[in-house]
Length: 456
Image 1 (cartoon, rainbow, N blue to C red):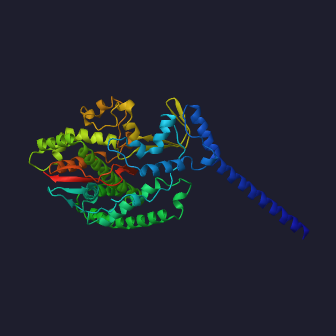
Image 2 (tube, one colour):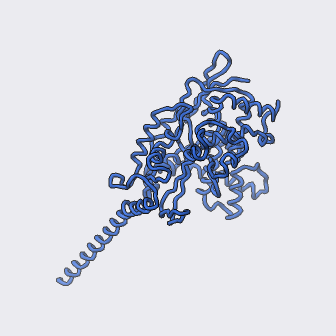
Image 3 (cartoon, rainbow, N blue to C red):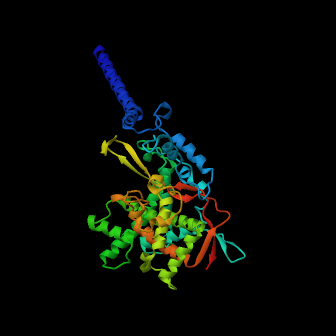
């Protein structure tokens, strides 16, 4: 009996030691993650000349997130004039950091769970209210109408069907895109995507619904392929046939959904933003609006603008390049350094997120001159290479192997839409227009784009 008690005591001791050891290991790992590694990374960057706010106990876990949130919320409460610099409103914290520490700066920031973006965007559910004037013109929030138009176009491209036919799929894709906007600002803690939050649960629900919808389309397409039937070419069928050819079946439905969602975003969100800002800027700069209109008439005459003539629209190409410079759809590019990397003379620590603020680079006076914040399409008269003096200073759709695959599609669509608008309407800013660019995945006007349209 006594031996058994001693044995039991020994077991208890070993259990306690194992528990304490596990607790210490876990504590060390947590300390290493939230304090030791960030401080080591900070020292390494500062030794190479980078500057930024010190990582302290008050910034534990979330770094500069609090300051960033306060700065952005305050920026959204203020409007600016159309000729004011947009960067302090679009990226206020990054702008102030660069002003304080210079271009070789860093910020300690994790993505955070943001506000409910839908509350601040009144144009999310478009209202087709036309305010008619005595001269036959009307006030239109072109943001709402262009959103519907680009959605219809991308629906034809994706599935070769009318928007109404697959409306539910697009409602789902739109909601997934809205969730993606939120998740870009959610704290990136390990396993966060598996937590039973409302956002995660809703995301899984609509993904399941999308899987079911795609399964129906996949089965229809698979049956048609087996029966030797020919079907209209579209982006979804190209993706599907590629999957079927390589794996004799769909290996990863999530990848297929991701590709469709990416194309939806590229063909809808970016094109909408580009067209809306173009119409706003041409409303302000009437001389460029008229020059673009005359080019459309010169190229197409009395016929409807078509694909064949788009390559001849040099002035409109210049205008779009300048719009994309001032209001790029994506304000920044980020890349995670997975292992310690040598970049020129600098050594970048592992787990460092490199951020390239495109909108700041596009408005850098050292690269573009003192008129960097002005709308001057003529700077692109001899092409992008000449405008940038051969430097990599203009990439509204990214650059290199990860350049946006929808770039050409988006530009072609935007040219065709703008050419049709210019040949039928003149437009100017409505008195109710408020200049308030802000970021909700893409750079958009916070209060819509009410313009006065007149039939030509």
